Image (cartoon, rainbow, N blue to C red; front, side, top):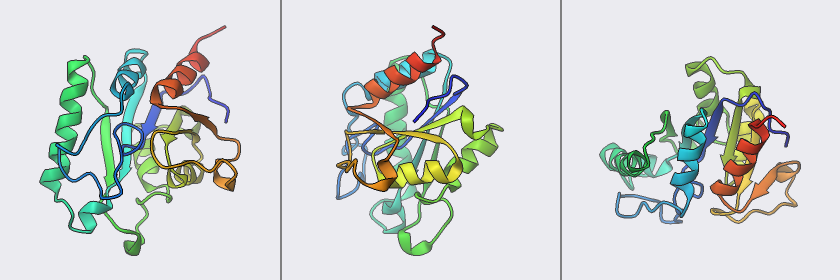
Length: 186
């Protein structure tokens, strides 16, 4: 992956990138726990002048495992912790559907990323997606956006075609270091 110096927007998957993931879904603020260093990485990206947004599949809504009030309470917890670091996300975009709904917003389809691009009139080369799953990478590619992976979520099988040519980092901190380094003139 080539990270463009024109990047203005970082799109983050939530579960497995910002917070610890769970096979049982994150259903309450008590279950939402930030990955060490992830919120600080977001703050560094924001303080460097980048827009930072979350694009997350939340099929737990469609499955009835949580409701919108639960999801918004989780996002409020994340926002409060970011505020303690003097920053905030520019937006949170989520798909509430299950695979059976066949919607355009559920990753690996590009709907969430395209919505973000429309919202801020962004070109694909101005965005990078940071994710932990093939769904994230495939959605980025479908939207024409650069992507990189982090090892803090789902296991990454780098031999899979989706991961070919994608830089993979230990965590969001390392991905942020790379992104910010690419934006620094030499």
